[in-house]
Image (cartoon, rainbow, N blue to C red; front, side, top):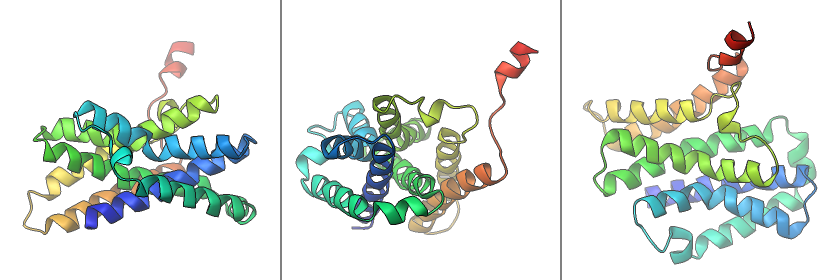
Length: 205
């Protein structure tokens, strides 16, 4: 039940972020739904295909389509209010990557993958819905921008999880702590303009 709740919350967060991007691009209602849908389930779909978990989750559990549709309707109705909230898109996107990274890691553990593979799977789950969204919206995906700490936050949170579960604490606390580490890392990176080294500065120098 705990993991299901996390999955639903992550789906809602990513679905709303997809709606806001689609509306910023002035897409029609069908386009808004498609962008919201691929943002919410794109990473999870790729994850399930990689581990052979087919049919993929949203095909087996119709509740995900219902949740995404509800998020679309909510976001469209309250779009004006959401647009007036600064960094709303960023906040929902950040919450989404924190939740989905750990869901991907949990899926990797269920099929007995090594920790490094679980972290990779978690990063794919968290990031590739956004990659598909940005590509469809004719944008360079956030994960590939040098000024963004995105996948790095997922990797850091996933690594922290495997360190924390070695300590004498409840696994659920380690799980929640890892989610918070991902979210806080991304928030602090943006607030203090922390980014990965820009190799192009050295090349152009």
